[in-house]
Image (tube, rainbow, N blue to C red; front, side, top):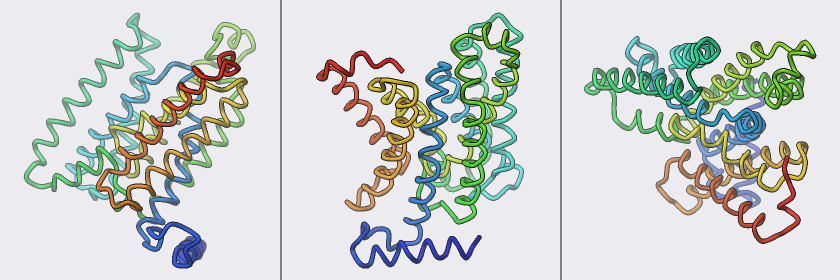
Amino acid sequence: MDNVFSVIKLTIQHWAELGWLPSSLAYGFAINALLAGIIIGPVLGLLGTLVVVKRHAFFSEAVGHSALTGVAIGILVGEPYTGPYGSLFGFCLLFGISLNYLRNRTGLAADTLISVFLSMSLALGASVLLILAGKVNIHIMENVLFGSILTVSAEDIWLLAGIAVIVVVVCVLGYNRFILSSFNAELAAARRINTKLLDYVFVMLITIVTVASVKVIGAILVGALLVIPAAAARTVAASMRSFVLLSVVFALIATVAGILIPMQIDLPVPSGAAIIICAGSLFLACVSARTILPHLRGGNA
């Protein structure tokens, strides 16, 4: 595994030195960030189509924000601040599963319940951070909030790759079931599709992707990359197939551009912020195209 990664890294550095690739890719940390973006961007785009169809945008934002509390708890209990994955996965999974469980057991609207959980999570995170204020460098928390390409390691890339495989396999095998249960839960149940199980699977997919993306995109902004490329694709797509394809492509473009452009022009912008700005620009371009080009107005994926 490490040999494969080293070969890829050396090849990219060599091409950058020859001028075939951007000069910033001559540095190891830039290659790590680029590889992470190439892996996570399309995965977020694919999963984002389900987020948009199921109208779970607020939920994905809440899970992303809960990652901040997970990191704070991890540092408090002694995990390394560069990768407190145990607490991140544990807290975010508990957050998402508990939220979904209570959504099915109470009469409260989903947005109300999410708001309650999000407020409690942020309050807990803020309290823990105050306890850690004298022990943790403030720049560490900035990296968690907004992402930093400097913190991406080879281990993070392999983790991303493993999670990407899981998400893609689950989505490919169950995509039609997810879509049917989103549009018509009664019909899905009549066809013996376990809609409640699918909801929990979906929650876990969002959680593991969110946690894995924190280093590149940041806890505050990762939910946005789940939504914006898919929203842009939904605006101009003429079919479900083009909706999924465009969402994946838009997420990949936004991620790669957001990583490379600030490095190329020496702009001190967090990677997460740059990625979301690129994604937002694509969304505005799609909205403008739909307004200007009449044949796109009929596209309702």
